[in-house]
Length: 117
Image 1 (cartoon, rainbow, N blue to C red):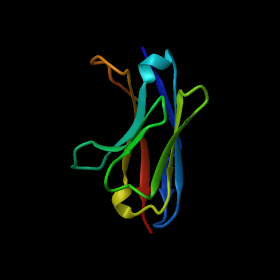
Image 2: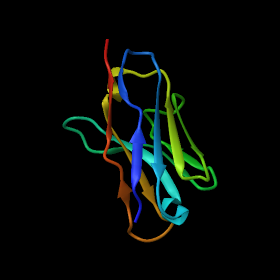
Image 3: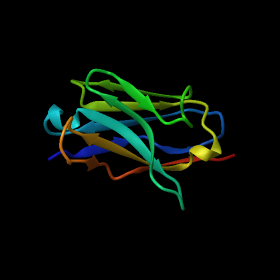
C-alpha cells in the first residue's frame, strides 16, 4: 500500500510560479512511476507530467516548456515546478504513483491550483 502526501498549490496571478511536492510512503517499487495529473471543472483528468525511477519524464502537451518534474529523497518524493502559469492551468492537481507492472494505481487527495488576476 502507498500513501501520497501532497503540498503546495494555492492562488497565483498569471505568469507567476508554483511548486507542488508529493511524498510517497511504502516501497519504492510501488512508486516506479510518480507523477501529476489535473482535473478542471467539467473536464476529464489529464496527464501533467510523469517521471520514473530512472528520471525519464513525460509531459502533457499543454505544459511542455513551462513545467518541470523531478524526483528527490531516495526517489520517493516528486516535485512539480510550474512556471509561466496561465488561467487554463487552474485545476485540482493529483499526485499519482504506480509500480512498473500490474494494475495498482495510487492517488493523493488533490491540491487546488488557481491562476487568476
